[in-house]
Image (cartoon, rainbow, N blue to C red; front, top):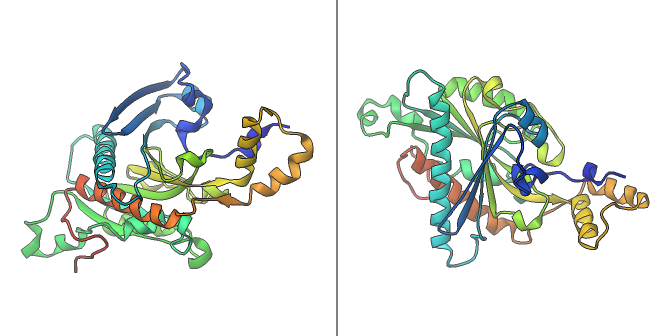
Amino acid sequence: MDKKEYLHTDLAIENENVAGRLATEGVIYEENEENGVSSLTVKITDAAGEQALGRSKGTYITLSFDKLWDIGEKEGAAAVTNALKKALESLFNESEEKESEKKPKRILVVGLGNRAITADAMGPSVSDRIAVTGHLAEEPALAALLPKDLLFAIAPGVIGKTGIETFSQVKNAVEASRATHVIAVDSLAALSVDRLSRTIQLTDSGIVPGSGVGNHRAALNRKTLGVPVIALGVPSIVSSSTLVCEALEKAGISEPDPALRPILENGKSFFVTLKDCDAATEALAAVIADAINQSAEAIHTRPGAAIH
């Protein structure tokens, strides 16, 4: 029985080649650490790299840090915000290098997920905190006061509540806002509970909403939307089958007994999250929204406030 079929992660850093920093054709690594935030950049440059890591060609940046939801973690939050802002700007710069001319950005922030489920509410929690400025550009008296880059935000919900595919809503929002870039924020799945709400992954390869729980929807990427898409995700769940395999491995059992297959199969449908997931989501959503607002030099308002 191959235990790999029971392991699922959305994180590039948890690929065994990346974890071991193995020299792999078509893959480039870059690591650094600053103010307690470690950063690993993995660049997949060709088909060989895609096959080795099982991911699309592109840049994957993973930030790792201590938990931010304890009282007194303001300095830690500021360090993560700064690191995330730098990561966003580097991906923006890479996308602009592919264009013939750098122009002011119109950034659509898409908060993916279900706000009614705490472990899946990261996207909507971030979109609620974006200091949107796009609508103000139509006001002549305000246009001159706005930052160069404009922000728009939507939280499309999930098809089970709306009956409408997420892709359709995002595509329409891109056209309505005339967005030049999309930042799609979502909750992810991880292999280890130690990474829950202590990791942020960014990639310019896009995202497939719902993939973390095996409910794949239409992809959001440059090819499907026509503009650069930065996917930004925070792991918030681990599948039960993954936890069982991890426990067996720590007990020295590398290959599970075939008799465990029914248990592992059932575990694919059950997910575990942090007991203080609500506090973790609030803390990380604030950090992510601050980084996006600052990277766009947006007008700063109190968290969650809208500009009318």
